[in-house]
Image 1 (tube, rainbow, N blue to C red):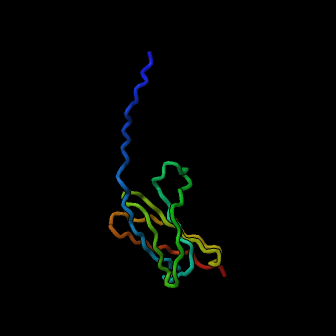
Image 2: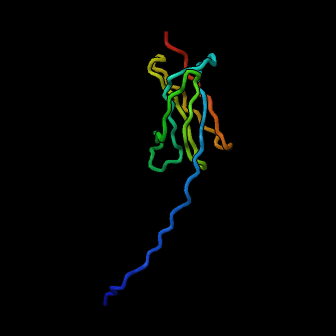
Image 3: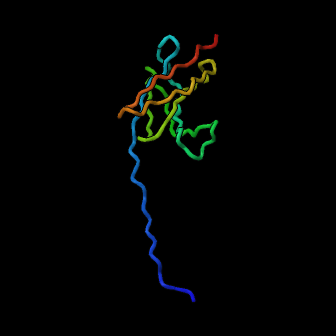
Length: 115
């Protein structure tokens, strides 16, 4: 015998994530500012990303002083990487972001420029 009475389903949404501003600076090996670099934020905790390929979740361009700002979420683990085609095709190492502070900051060093 079927029961055609309406059923109650309760959905509970998780708490909203708290955003965190991640700031930093892109410099060259002489610690001089690198402007107009593309800086990408990668989420280490994304369950859909492949082990060898992290998910890019935000990007920004560095200003003329090398400074940039990105938005992430507290409780997550991130890396940043800068690229600049006019910088000899340069790509920085993946740099971990220390999320233990309320205002994480990171310095990204571009490899030496090609002659």
